[in-house]
Image 1 (cartoon, rainbow, N blue to C red):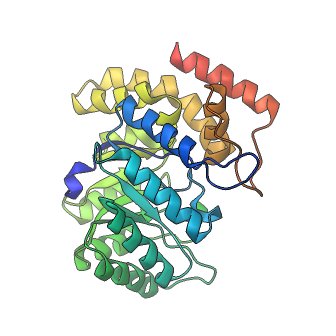
Image 2 (cartoon, rainbow, N blue to C red; image 1 turned 90 degrees about the vertical axis):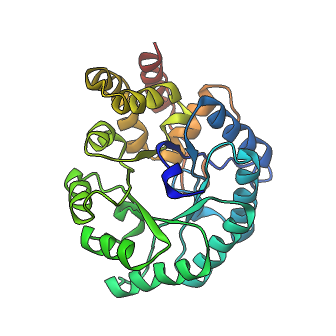
Length: 296
């Protein structure tokens, strides 16, 4: 499956935990992914920030990756999030995802020590040599501590055959324009900043990587379709209707707010893993109100 298949709404599932045992609830994970696929999203991206990948053991990560890919069953493309402090384990995870049937991996470099641009390049190059599926570069300095410039990202795409896509999550629309310019529009880029969704689509984003479809799938899909068909006035109305929800889930932390929202919808997905905390009651009431207003 080529990278052109990755377009539209790319949804992030949560990783549910058993309330007693504390391990991954594979049954609920499968149910939550089925809910997303059934809603009409265009791709699934397990084990990103929303999926609490950073808080999982290797065994848990493997179980979540395997269960997610199996549940999707090739009905839509799957891009598996890969992040680890070491290149060695990032390669292990990428190879595991490929073996399970992932269509691509989304690589987020993270670091304790500040990495040079060459170290980042070599990290991606090593993963690219180890797998035979496309790599999406994921730039999210808020969670990784690494901010890749458009020039570096452009180099990764030009010089590493496996690197074919870019997800930009800084919330800086000018970076997307710069990537578009540096590649003559040939680098597919994806928006990872919820409040920037409309502007990013207008700027030429191939898709929107977001956890929002867990709670408001129809609005996110309708927004993409409205932009794709040139109905910009309708797209603006759809975007501003969902914007309060988008801002709330981002500010409150995606694992925390999305799990709370799913619980409000009757799915017992558990709570985030400590040190993350469940959403406070006052904020749950606010989320309830925002969802009611967006869905009306």
